[in-house]
Every structure is written in C-alpha cells, then in structure tokens.
Image (cartoon, rainbow, N blue to C red; front, top):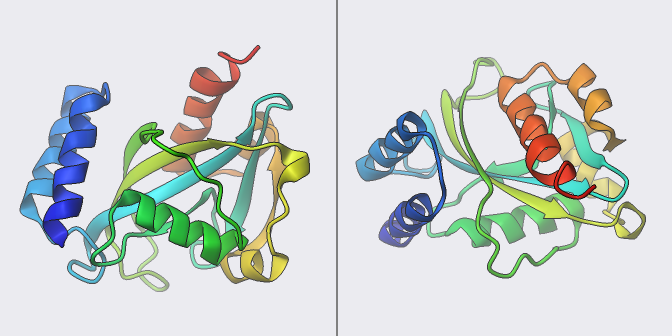
Length: 186
C-alpha cells in the first residue's frame, strides 16, 4: 500500500513548480519510505486543508489544542491512505462534512520542524497543502468536532490571521493564499 502513496507523491511533485531545494528535500524523504506516522513517528507526511472565501478575503483558522498555535485544519496520513483519502477523512473528523475537490492538485508544499516534545512525538512534517474555496455563509461545520481539535476558531482576514500566527509554516500558507488566491480573484 505504501507504494501507492509514494508513487502519488512523486507524480504530484513532477507536476507542481517548486524550488529545487524544496523539491529535492521532498523527493529524498519520499524515497526513504515509511511516510506515515504509524511507520515513522519522527518524520512523516501530513495534509493541510486551508479553507478560504475569496470573495470576502477570509480564511478559516483555529487555535490547535495540542500545539497551542493558530493553524489550518489538517492531519497525519494513515497507513494505506493516499492524499485525498486523508483529506476527506480529516474533513469528516474535524468538520463533519466533506468539500469535494475533484482533480485539484495540492497547491503548496512545506516542511515543518515540530518543537513541542511534551505534547507531540513528531519531529518533522512534510506538509501537502490543499487550498479549498468555500463560501463562508455556506460553511456549517459541527462545533463538537471542531472543539476536539481547536480551543477557538473562526473566519479571519489575512492580517488578523497573521497577527495570531507564530508558526512559520502557517505564515507561508497565509502568504500563499494572499498572493496566489486572493490577489488573483480581485
């Protein structure tokens, strides 16, 4: 099963323009195998899904229970899953609903060094990001599910989200949304 994920990630990396150093870092990690937290608790692949309303220029973000940081939704890939399996499972677990993305590829790749050893055993995440357009007024997640993941959450402007965010990876996501999504939808 791992070969499906490994092959999918290598194919995605071929089709997405990335800086050579980041692409090489991802390819090297993917070729090592053991890509899930179950297989390698220290270093593994994760999926983020950043919800944004382009017409209102808002993002949905929350203060994560384990890290205490303001983050987008996301999670670890389970053994046997490929990217969209994880994406849709995490949406169901965290929102109680699924926003289908059809053939939309991931939009952003980041590497996150985890520095919270008391609450998380992870040391490094290889993050695959999906930017998901959604009408704020039609987004009705289940609060009881969100409260398992976040202390608080809500729709924020990019500036509001940046003022709350200390995490470099989330800041990269916010800058990507600002420059690649919001500025293109003027």
